[in-house]
Image (cartoon, rainbow, N blue to C red; front, side, top):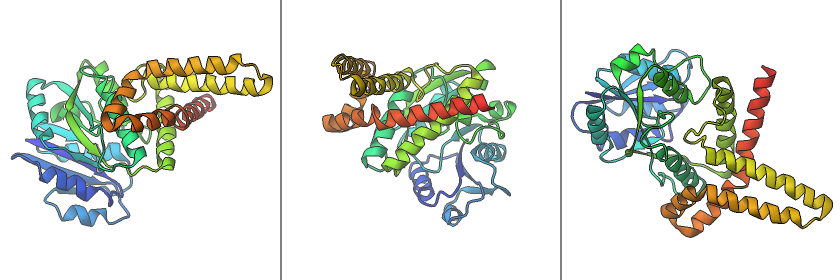
Length: 322
């Protein structure tokens, strides 16, 4: 049996779609466990309308504990972790079962579909970005994300699961690294596809970029792997941020000196960034055409890079202060 475990915290907007996608594509011998982390909206009423098992935490404790409690209550030999804003696509459960049979003692991951459930610009940008970054880690990823994570229940419980005293996010990165240090192999199967519901505006996109960069920087400094090529924290993204910082410095120098050398060097840096990001450019183009790719790269190399860079700087300052 496969147990699908979903943490929920005020997921009223998405949890119904999440469960409908599962039950619309579910083979026999599958159970679904939703662990509610003290929601204050109407999501629990929506969950109760489905035949899933509902567990309610007595106090707000975070997604890590919610997943751990779901794993303890699971009856399946294999656990499939996903999120309340994720839609399991057709054929993904069968692919998951086949992958586990072929690699039983492995931490297995999937990724987002190139295009998300919602088709606004910022949601599409984020879905392509994650799909490309995580797909580039095939077959041996640096981490496995909990939007599509498979592991045998016995191995998960032996590991004591996710840390419940960790940062508010990226507990899946810490778990993956801990499993690998313990000798477990990590495997990325890009055929395990989850369609994400983002609902991103410009502000939500920038806030997400800042927040993830902030916490990832804090974790990476403690883990001593700040410059590691790691999925969405890729060398390409870090190079993008560094090159845009240099470009901003050159622009400031040009305003002061009016030396034409500075714009020329800036153009060379932009060309270098495009070369480094050429795989991402191809992914954007393939997902939604040349116009989308052009707009997305303009965003990626300006506002998005600034938000990621600011999050990283604030994360470094937090570590220095601590």
